[in-house]
Image (cartoon, rainbow, N blue to C red; front, side):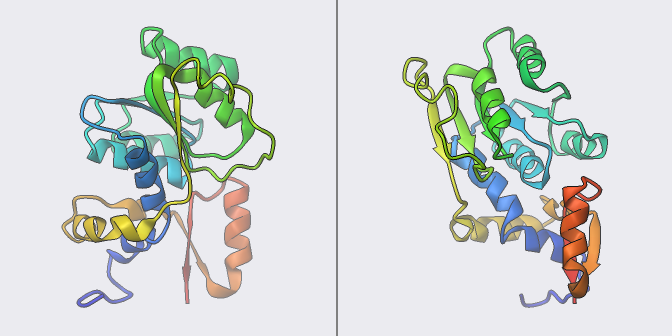
Length: 213
């Protein structure tokens, strides 16, 4: 990019526009997050945190982040999460329902891809609401609740992010300092150490690894 070299502090944020930030943005965009919306984000990984940031950019009034890693949820709060729910399963579902006066969340962004995360999303979504999935599904069978979407008028959306469709709007936001999604990179590894970068993320010792060469 003209005027930006590899030493620029903007590089990490610009890198997220090829994948992680715009995946979170896609989840919020597909769910039609708008001013006044209540959003619950399931998962405090890099995509989930990006979805928090994107939802705030779109004007969400309340953003509930479901995660239990303190360093990550602290970043989520900085990026706009109004509430953090650390419980999982039935306890986590009840915590979100308590926060929303028993109604549930208008939008739920599922940023994990495992069956328990989908089931949790189904448990906290409001009747007439939207579940937006961008966590790559690690299951083949239709999840519990699939057939019940119809009766509750729940929309299921999401999928792979078409980042090229969003990048031209996002680049000026990064260059202008409006957003700094590159903060998801908390570990740097050399090209020869990519495997260790993945291993650190798998051990939850790293949120997102930045590869240098």
